[in-house]
Length: 115
Length: 110
Image (cartoon, rainbow over all chains, first blue to last red; front, side):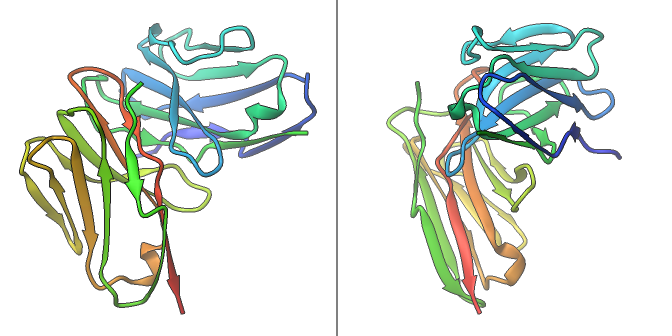
């Protein structure tokens, strides 16, 4: 079974530039999550999709971050413009139904460095 | 928001030693999950606990859901080199989103 695919693996940009990350979840998984993991911390949820609808985006900095999952399958997360404090690993995860503490399957992440 | 505090922050042990780490919170949770993250990878679920007092094993790993529902511990017996990584607890209440702990970094000294 193919896992959660993310690209790119690494990205280096200058502050105020834009960047986009892509995620393809496990086939058949209705729920997709984007997490931000700052060095030395645990993952923090940015946004959760159920199919193509947003379930929770309470911790997404909406002035600069946006995400979409138009066809309910793959998803993109964009940062525009980037700030130094956005340097982190961006993890995508998927689960079957998004119920409670259902098992999450994580991708390998995109490591973003903002200079 | 809810916070999960893990201790210790980091551990340096020799191969073959047993390891113990825990996770505490001021809030009550319904579920405790333990994840392991290898360098450059996403977290992988190790053990899930759903009932207060529950004790669950997965090979050399054993985890328990605290009776007060505010804590959990993870033990690793007879550590091996592939145990190196960061261990995260995660929890939630009801259908709320998962909250991850601060992590315990395990290093094995040759």
